[in-house]
Length: 93
Image (cartoon, rainbow, N blue to C red):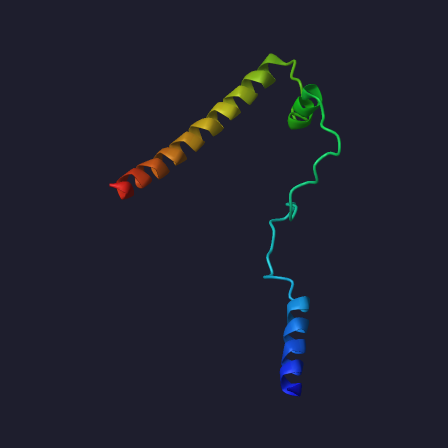
């Protein structure tokens, strides 16, 4: 019976020491989601928080440049997604 106790103790120790599989997160990415705020923020502060990296642009040329960049990005994403959707459509038949 001493063997059973030693095996059980070794298993308990192994389970206690196990921390899970080793994973690597991309640089700059947190391992988990940010903790929620203790107090719910009002709608205006939530909007500001979502758009905190956007700055107002008064220069019309800069504004047009930004719109062109955003439109180009949307078009590239749409083109990529169209290929994926076509592939899914072919495989679902």
